[in-house]
Length: 330
Image (tube, rainbow, N blue to C red):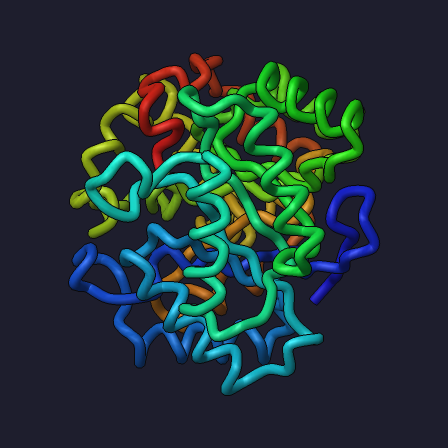
């Protein structure tokens, strides 16, 4: 497994991050793996050299953090791994149980550490922009969380370029920690981050760790019939369904057949070759799926293959404008 620096920091992370949204309990979503299957996936990831594990307090309503933390404590040394969790999405019905207020951030980090069974996380990520809390309040609270030793770095997810620019400017102006990574939606079917975000990451030295690299399974190939995740996800219809998708998936399948590999491996290999890419967040629920994605790190696409994959794409509107209140689709 190759390791790279997370943005301009000294933190080394594997080229693939294991996203743990789908590891937790089927009580939350039917497509989520329960603990025995989740442990097997994490064990295989560790054995392959993956050291970067990302979860969130909202995933399985906290059970993902519990399962991820328990498994990592059983199978890895703390100084060998990089653990990330997130804050912002609702943890209850009351308005104080969500968002990025100082109160909720302080309470959320303590609750997450308790579920993870850890003294600190390596990366604490704001899950979305909070339109009801001043960004200055959020950034200062994150600064204080880091000063308290509860996180080493901070990051953001589902941000627009203007939001990231403002956050970086204020962090620099006040001496608060900069976001070292951005987790946005990005794959062969949605490349809207290429318009503004990718150039900004490169200019500012921000690590890019996108989610949904296989587009809810749509990039599994031309014979794809729909994943359990997509069928049970009300947001999928608002993200996908554009007229260019069939042509892109066809090219993925053709190149995979020509190379004698799987479509998911071609889609992942393409992502790893995007300029500025740090570590895409993969989300397998089975060991076999994970092994396929790990093998994709050994594939290098030729320029003409990349052109075939990219040419059918039609520019999409930035997806985060769809729903201001959710601030993203994950």
